[in-house]
Length: 200
Image 1: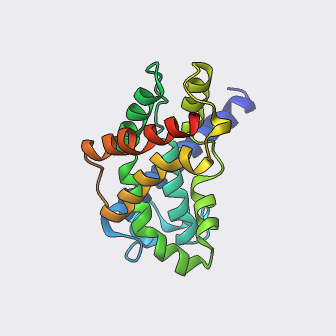
Image 2: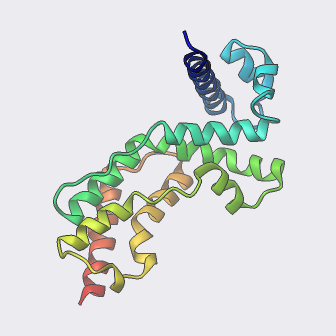
């Protein structure tokens, strides 16, 4: 085996170990919450030594933010293409509701503890966790423009973000996935009528 192959194998093992540690941290966070989570409890769940954690993350705050980010990036939401803006919104909101609600619930419950512990602002914590990834909605709005359904230049940014802002607010307030009739109301009673108004 060449040196390059050995390095690649070591790197893969390192990546697999880090992913396992982050999964353990996420499970611990979801089960006991931020206040009760410790580096030692995560190490015990991962069946490793606490020094292994400290070699990668200097403290609990950094580990928790990395775990939340890892959970989000390893569970992507597929961008739907149903052939219509309304259909795409229903499909996307439904997928986010099904696959991302645990992330929102745990992150919301963790947020206050992170703010107090790190001294960061809410925006700084969000950037550390979410990064600067493009919004999923950008693709469905681009397709809707190509189909001639909307002209995004005529729509305020607040209107375009509204379905996702309302879903996030509901998830944060109830800590539960949205019922189907709430998603229908967001799309059919609020978003689509507003789009039609601004398109006139």
